Amino acid sequence: MTYFCLLVDETAESIRFLLKDWRRLLQAFERELLTLLPRLRRFARALARDAADADDVVQVALERALKARDQWAPGTRLDSWMMRIVRNCWIDEMRSRARRARTFVPEEEGLTVGSGAHREVEIRAEMHAVDKAMNSLSPEQREVIALVLVEGLAYREAADLLDIPIGTLTSRLTRGRQALAQMLEAA
Amino acid sequence: MAIDDDMLMAFADGELDQIGRARVERAIAGDPDLRARLEQQQRLRATLAAHYGPAIDEEVPEHLRAMLATNVVAFAPTRRARQPWQTFAALAASLVVGLALGRTVLTPAGGPIGVENGALIARGPLADALETQLASAQAPQSATRIGLSFAAADGRLCRTFEGASISGLACRADSGWQLMMTAAGAGGARPDYRQAGGANPLVAQAAQELMAGEALDADAERRARDSGWRRSGASR
Image 1: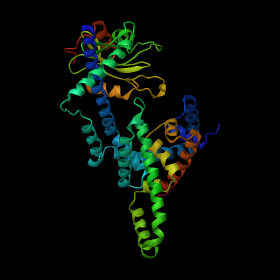
Image 2: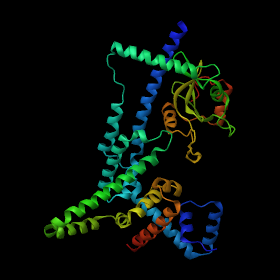
Image 3: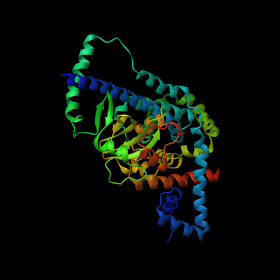
Image 4: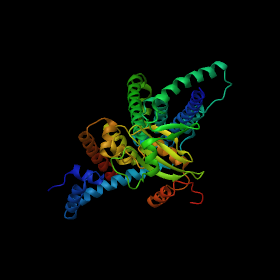
């Protein structure tokens, strides 16, 4: 009986230990996200139209990641998991922007399309040549350029992250690159 | 043989194997046009790096950092007065878990972990690996792989390890190797995702936090083992 009580006591102690450990793991998730933030911002900036848009995408991605933390398997790479979320948030954002544009522009056409177009031209003129060139790529080309040329992922990693065959990745990469090189060398 | 754009691109991205690299290098040497195309690729890489690279060094906006900081606080332990039923529930729970543990972990022939004075202690082959295996000289087929060996701030020597079912971080106490943290093992993890210091980033992080100074190199690791993993009083 004494032995049994001892056992219970020790077990309670080790459970406390494990719980503490678990709490530490949870905090480690946030800490690791924190160290990933600069990289995620760079990645988002290569995707999004400008720096402000990029940070909005990162913010939405963080919200999503914190909610979906259970879906991340500890021991797998958090950076790949997180970059996939950032990329998905960017796609969603572009889609909803396109939807908004379709819904609202016709109603305002008579009044604002002139100044709106003018504003768009201004924004484009202010933009850096690299941003401009990246923006003119298709989303499919932009994301592979961002992953491989900006983030330095290996082809295999980038293809896995985007769930595309490696041949698709390299052909998008080749075309995106040619387009970028043409625009930037001409500028 | 002609070098096409795909191959040139793969060369610029460091994706070719040794034979492919040699072939491109040879072709470039005798073909100024090809060289010019490669340089264009490299210029593009440099332009992108120069444009997006500085984002890494920028200060992260407070509102983004705060999203993670508040969550850390939210998970901090909260102390509340315990209700009597909670004590009872905890006792009952630990009884159940205790019985389960007793059947699995604590059986003499049993698993890699035992309990001693309220601390988790490595047992059996895991303890042997921690005690004797050198990271610099371990057989590829050994069940447990040692990652880093290092001295903690309190002077204890600690090691990260990785097995099929469990990985973690253990420090040498008087009674044996005390497990400071444990995580899932490598299991079916893809070997190309393995990182230095153990496949599990949580283990690497825990080691990072505990470590005072640098990890032991091969010589220091051997000396530490030969002296029975005694606390490193003046090793730094």
